[in-house]
Image (tube, rainbow, N blue to C red; front, side, top):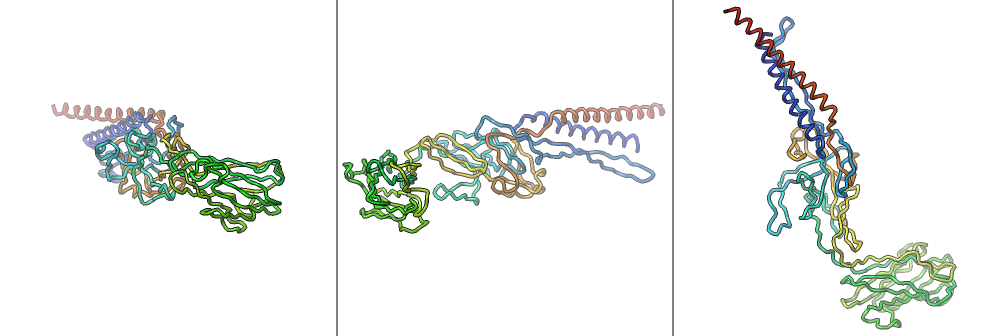
Length: 433
């Protein structure tokens, strides 16, 4: 190797250490950046010519080594919408393409799909989940009528904060035990229900024992337009209980009311009509199953033993908050107690995640080296979602300082070779003089 070859090699060494300095400085600067993945440096030797008797000048280059698969520390956050992935995978996110349309309620997005581990999401004024770098979280929408997740559509989810309309009560479930020897007759219970406008109404159920294991039930609704007095029930029914105390028969003679068939093991339901001023509102009274111990029974006692009564109606409700469970289900909660799942967050995985292309804001795009993303529900690839938490940078400061000292020494040593070569060349020039 000639002196000039040594100069070339040393220059390449300084350039390679400069690249290492760049990576180290990036890592140190982003040691507190949520979801940041550090960049290591690999040094590669390039040999121009070499033989058993002669070693020609060579050079070294620096190549980045990405650590996208190295988990950062998962830290609890005060933000309930913050998310962290435990294991492999990335959140699917989108970048805005332009400003919001007139009215500021919608946003357009780039067609390019992005991926990130930065899960410090918050709800912006337009109702989108956005992280601190401005990336919009993508999810699968859920059909609110059927609860089915549409896995063919992955897009930013906009959460409506409008008032939810009321839901008229259509079903009342009752779990109670009638007494075999009532101290008073009839025995009563009351259930609060809602009409189609969300007004609170009362449904009073009154049972009268007519014989051994025989009962009549009358349903009263004071707010019903056809029931102006307590003596005018909106429906009546007859019930028979078996020797084991379970309901065996149910029937009604009320017009527009209907009782289910008396089949053991099948639901015991009485559907009654009500009218609170907005047309007929059919309400199904669920008494459990024929022959079943859950629901309406008859056991020893002198008073009705009510274990539980519930109904499916709700009044109008205002947006309260948003919650995300460990399966990635995004649920909108209202101040009337009503909750509705609107979307599900999936996870993107890659065959070679370290080959993803870095972009600004801790986001990545797929590359030829990484392969295409595989989108699956959380947990399908051994990963998990940690709610109310974020993933910290995976940079270790102590390691970076060690690398910094090593790079500094290597850079100085290369510069020393150049200084020495210059001195040797000066000696050669002086010989000529």
